[in-house]
Length: 165
Image (cartoon, rainbow, N blue to C red; front, side, top):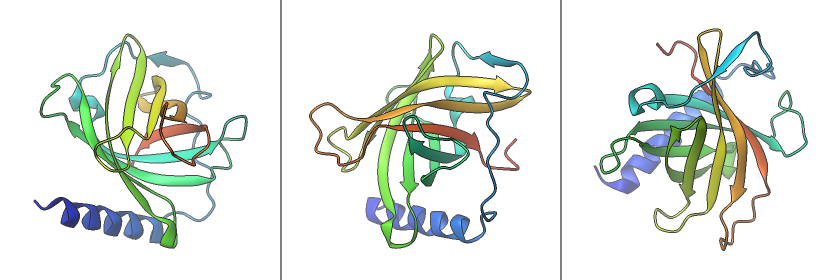
């Protein structure tokens, strides 16, 4: 499939999801719920699928995300222990799309993000937590070293879209 058509399709999906989103609801915290377990390793099959992404300033409140997005992950075709996918985030005319790839190993979640599909623009690090049977990934997204990204350091939380099984 043509990459441009794929990006436009993802932007359309994100816009539709945003239009049907619950107004001003506070997403569940995940990590602060009852007993949570850190995953040491997650195979691509468990990371694959559609995720809601929430972002807020480092030191800010996860109850008040400043940015939201849609992340679609699938098995990486070359690195079979990892995943690759597309991230669309922002709102209205400020929608941005990027490519991502990463994995969960030794209890740590790693994701590399590229705005142009070539140079790394941001790196994500965090933990995959199972809180009462619900997988949540939390951590920090930082501009990649040497990138010209204007984005600040942000905290993030990834949650499966409702209805995911």
